[in-house]
Amino acid sequence: MTEQHGTDASPERLASALMEKGALSSDWLPAFKRAPRHMFVPDVIWPGTAGGNRQKRRIVRAQEPRAWWDAVYTDAPITTQWDDGTYTGADKDKIPTSSNSMPTMVFSMLDALSVHEGHRVLEIGTGTGWNAALLSHRVGPEDVVTVEVDEATAEDARKRLQEVGFVPLAVVGDGAAGFALEAPYDRVIATCSIGQVPYAWVQQTKPGGIIVAPWGPTYGGEAIVRLTVKSGGTASGKFIGSSAFMRLRDQRTERKHVREYLKGQPWPADGVKSTTMLSPDDVGDWHVMFAIGVQVAEAFPWMEAYKDGS
Image (cartoon, rainbow, N blue to C red; front, side, top):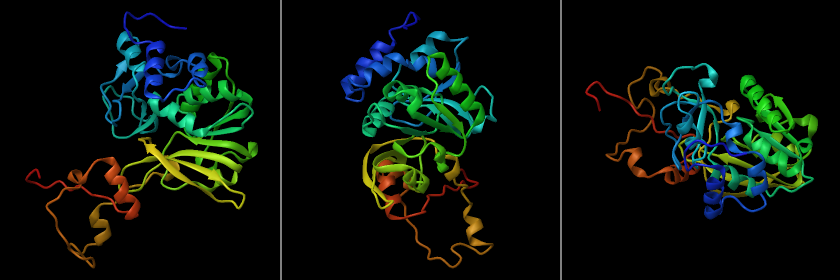
């Protein structure tokens, strides 16, 4: 179903653009048509930018229906929640905690999952429910289990899924634990980033099964990892492309201030002092940060503001 909004944005145009990019393959096109994105985007959103992690101003559908529609059928992520739902203001807030992912990323990850009819799929991070709907169309809702830690988000997603006729098993719980009651799975896909692969996902995946998830080191940067589970209870694979996802709640980290590490001692305490005129921001973009983070585990660039404004 295509609504009319006096705009060129439409499911058809987005599908064509995604197919031209090679993100949307012909075997996923029926799912795209059966579960249109606008059915899985809430009325209040903060549109993102393609290839970036900066949100634009808030759009309320009732006030700006055309702008809302244009945002939905643009190949860009859409933030749908801030600070685990505690923030309800008009502007942006500190931490985006739920979203409808960039369509290019959605279909690229689904393609990497190599899922087929008859596969049993575990999704970590229901979000708005769009990914679960696409998977439900592809393998059947009876073979999809989707886990969401936020109860309100899960309930909203469940309603959207029912509206389009899909009823996968939607679970409220900690995605880091997977969902053992319905294991084993042929495929596991995460729509939230991780710093380490929860071993429960490996345990709950059949030998030969595939896990697709966004992984990022502490320093910065992030990439999609595609792992194949082996019979010995291990999993290995390669990074297949860059990504930018919100962190799995179980693996969020609180950044300590430098003074907490120094424990009252003057800098550099018992460390070795070194200086450079090169800012971490000038070293390189996300792929460079990713390379540094992989090689220097747990390192993080701390920015300190001084009284003179520097």
